[in-house]
Amino acid sequence: MMPEETGYGRPSDVQFANPQRDTVRKVFYQGNPGTSDTLLYTSPNLPGARSEVLNIVVANIDSSARTFRMHMVPKGGSVAVSNALFYDVSVTANTTTIHDSLRLVMEEGYMLRGLQSVAAKLCITITGLVEIRRGGLS
Image (cartoon, rainbow, N blue to C red; front, side, top):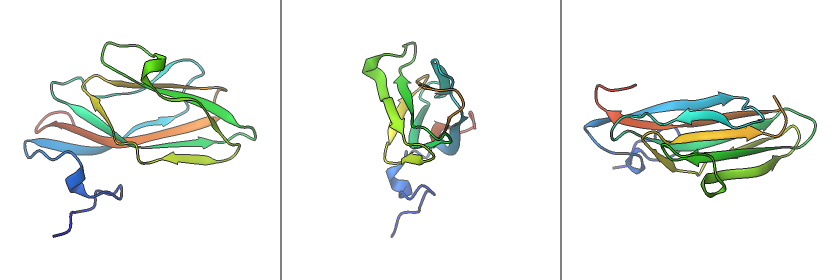
């Protein structure tokens, strides 16, 4: 028996698998982060909730290369070099980069925070899964 596809090109048996919980596909963030530390997404702050980041797409709409930073910050923590996912990563002018093999698990209350080097030049889209108890947040 072949596993069902999740829509992300990955079999569903690789994802969270708990019959007492619901897994919801979501766009966690889409927009232009600021040039200073910006909250992009917070994993639901519910007991046992968690999120999984599957894809990060960064589109540079400028005629010059631009950079961005992104951090996965634990609940109650703050941005630090020790929790950087991307640090001053350059995106070539007029191109899109796709990071689609991340599989980052975020426990309850974890945050994605980021910034870009020049305002309104990078559009970032982050997608993934949220696992919650049945009947809870959707």
